[in-house]
Amino acid sequence: MTQRDPVCQPRYRARAKRPTLDNIMTPPTTVPNSTPASVLIEPHGLAELLAQQQFSPHRRLRLLDVRWRLDIPEGRPDYIRGHLPGAVYVDLERELAQRSNPASGRHPVPATARLERAARGWGLRPGDIVVAYDDISGVAAARLWWLLRRTGVDVRVLNGGLTAWVLEGLPIEHGDVRPPRGTIHLTAPTGDDELTADTVEEYARTGIVIDARSPEHYSGQRAHPDPLGGHIPGAINLPTLAHIDSNGRMNAQHWLRRTFSQVGITPGSEVGIYCGSGIASAHTALALHSIGVASRIYTGSWSQWAHLRGRYIATGILPYGSLQPL
Image (cartoon, rainbow, N blue to C red):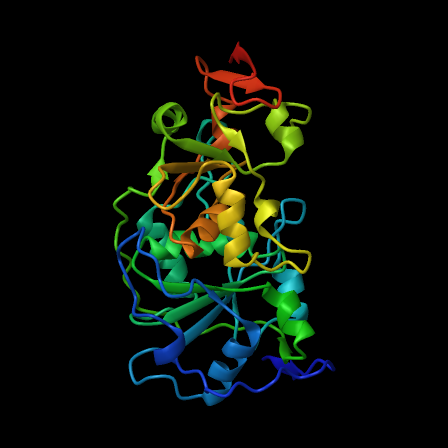
C-alpha cells in the first residue's frame, strides 16, 4: 500500500498548452537508431500527464524506478522510502543484467526472454509508454532506456530524475507498488547497436570509440573495481559526466553538440562506446541519441576487456599511449 507525500516546494508554472500522450510522446519505434522528437521528459510535463488520468484508450504511462549505484547496488530500500506516484521498482543487478563469469563483464546484457519476464513483472503491456528515472543523473535509467528501446518499447527518461521531481514540489509515495503481471512481448534486437570485443577493436581503428569512464581509469592511474586500469587502444576519453549539468540534468542540446564535435563526432559518425561495465555508456548513447547521432555500445566494456588474454591495453592520456599485452 503506497502513501502520498506532497513535498513542500514551489509548484511548477502552468504551461499554456496542456500536454497529452499524443503531443508529448511519439509513436513507438522498433528501429534501434531512429531519433524521436524527444528522448527526455521534464518533471512538469510528466506531472501533468499523470494528473490527467486519461491518456489514451490503448496506451498507458508506466513509471519505472531504477534506483542503483555502483557502491549501493540495492536500491529498493530508498525506493520504499519514496518514489514517484505509481512507480515500480526495477532491480538493475538482477533484471537489467545477467551474471555469468568475469570473462563476460560485470553487467552482461540479459537475454530477451529474461528481460521480457522482468518487464511483465513490472506490469508492462503492449502499447505502454515507459518513463524511467533514478537518483543518479539518469545513468541507471539510461540502461533501462537502451535495453527496452532496442526491443520495441516506447521509452523516455525523466530529465533530472527523482531530484528534479522533488525540486519541482511534486508528490511522492511511500511503500511498494506491485502491479498485475503484464503481457508485453519484446522483439529480439537486431544487434546493430551493440559491439563485441572484436568489433570494438575494429571501430577503434576505423571510427571513434568513446571511453566514458573517468580520466583516472582511462589513463590507468586507477583500476578499482577491475583488476587493472587503462583503456582499449585507440579509444578517446569523454566521461559520462561531461553530458550532465550541476543539477544532474542532461546538458542542453547545443552544449552536447559542441562537446561531441570537439572530439570529431557529428551526425553520420561511426561511434562506439564503452565504460566500466556497460551501464554509464548507455547514458552517453542517450546523449548522442538526443542530438541525432547513432552509436553502438560495447556491452562487455572494460570489465570484460581487462580479462581477455591476448588483447592489448593502453595507458596514459593518449589513445594509443603505452601499449602492453594482457
